[in-house]
Length: 497
Ligand SMILES: Nc1ncnc2c1ncn2[C@@H]1O[C@H](COP(=O)(O)OP(=O)(O)O)[C@@H](O)[C@H]1O
Ligand SMILES: [Mg+2]
Image (tube, rainbow, N blue to C red; front, side):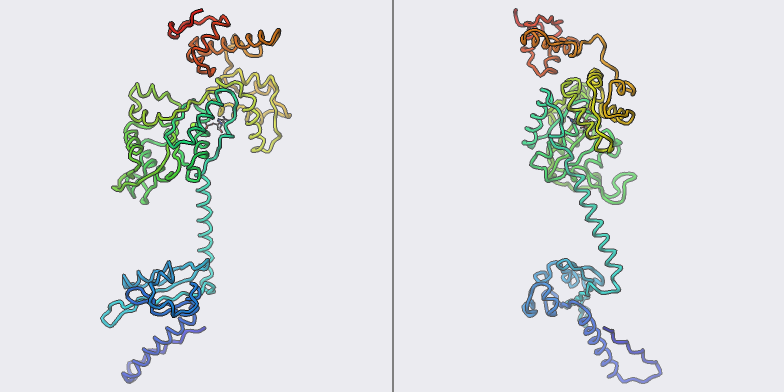
């Protein structure tokens, strides 16, 4: 296909009739139209109200219209849903180059307004070029590559915003662990705010993921961030978003806040106890009104987000000390789950270590290690202020340094481990079960209760909590087993013997 070669401009000296000029202009327009029409996959013309005046058969067929005449008089969007012809007649300005996707194929389209002698827009004409047009191939290749990359990035982002853990990842069958899982399962059924309390490394983040994954919001995003990890000056924008150039150093583009990103899903606010007081007030308002106002903007955005907050701090004490707003505390403290520290669930050490060793083996592709009983006993005796996170670090180091498929007590001792509990503390291993079943059970109970009481500095209420018993029950057992109480709890609570 060839465009008609434009006739050379007449030389000023050459004398041409008016008539020739007019013919040439008319012919030029006709040739141009014909050339475009035959070169193009589609041609469509609309009137000033964007109703179809004419469409060629081939193009009409693309949009499922058997007879092009049927399209005449219809609104353009009825035929081509994503058409921009209406914009051209509205603005009177051409859209010279655009890409139109039609059932998986892309066309380069050109749209030009048609003007009357007074310069008023009477309608518009659009041409859709073949997508196989050779000269445009590099342009298409690049476009498709970018589209592919965009799709991948979006997929990746969506995966990032999905929960990474479920309840099966929370290992442990001790009474304390079982109770936590029960509470968290119940939390997943409800849509209220959840507050997770516990020392660092006790699984707060893991549980937040699991609650989301088991909730009705599971198909929507899970967005989390650590309040303590973000400088105070950036925290507000991070939470609630910011209008373009809203704060010093801000990008010129608008910033979407985490609340908006989590819309429809769950927002995990880790280390909420570290939130500055001024922002706490704003957070409270957001929780009450379900809308956020991005920094430096005057629009409000409606949000539907379930908040799961976590902290390793003693929030109640922070409230008492004026470091945390009481009203926000009560707003968050609707459904509170206290995660047990590792020392409060020593029964779970075996399964936990197995689980972590399996993870290490999978990740490092090294052979799976097993723990000698001596090594396990040593780990159990240690203090773990960093809880499972710290336990994992120790096991990782041990796996790196030890050879052989078993980790011995010596291997564990070969690396830095947390301080052992005081030696005089009796351990479970000291109780060799002998005699009748009943006597052995009593000995075991006495041992366990004595040890827990020692750990708790004699505070019966605290020991009862660690053991997962009611305080009165523990007192009864202590009385039955002849375990003296130091009477640091309410003395009146002692049952009479
Ligand atoms: N009950 C558990 N079973 C197995 N792994 C756990 C458990 N709790 C925590 N972890 C692991 O320990 C590490 C710390 O957990 P995390 O949820 O980040 O704790 P926190 O948020 O309380 O500091 C993570 O690698 C997590 O997968
Ligand atoms: Mg954490």
